[in-house]
Length: 218
Image 1 (cartoon, one colour):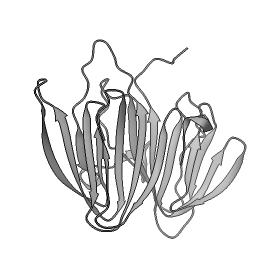
Image 2 (cartoon, one colour):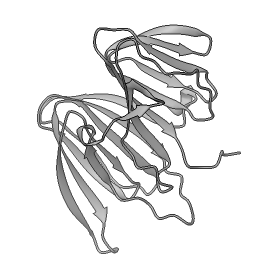
Image 3 (cartoon, one colour):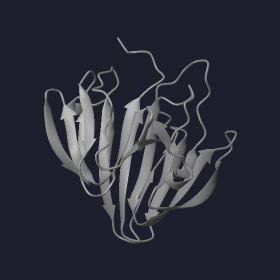
Image 4 (spheres, helix red, strand yellow):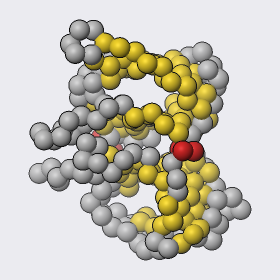
């Protein structure tokens, strides 16, 4: 969906796995991974370092809406228990000398409360990753009832990778409105003016990435 050759500072994939198929990633101490299960059921097995003497494994079941943020020190295997659609985002972890690497985070969006956005009860924001300096990314889900929108046109230094999970509407990008719907993806570079208006009969839900909590590289 996006990659550095496009200009993005990350790579994002939409992966379709038949039941029984799997993928593996060995820890490399450089790349962090975020997985989100769009549809289906799967099993995530982590292998993390343990005091330099081998490691330990843990297994979690994921259903639609389940997600995991895995630091560079964690290897993993994801196996589809049914036909699955998985979003996978990879980026180079930006370490801070005074902050320890975060622990693996495995959760489900259903457990994350939606917060009313800027006083509009028809716009709810779920923050899937804690707002803490250990994390150099944010992954959020916006839900808009039909007829509701972002209240402003935003412009900022962060880039976005945005995947529409449900519904449809019109996205303002740079200087024009573009219609989007479920399964569409948008990469927004830094400083791209942006806004959104939900138009369909269903609420719009989209998952988006942004880079946070780090100084601008020069």
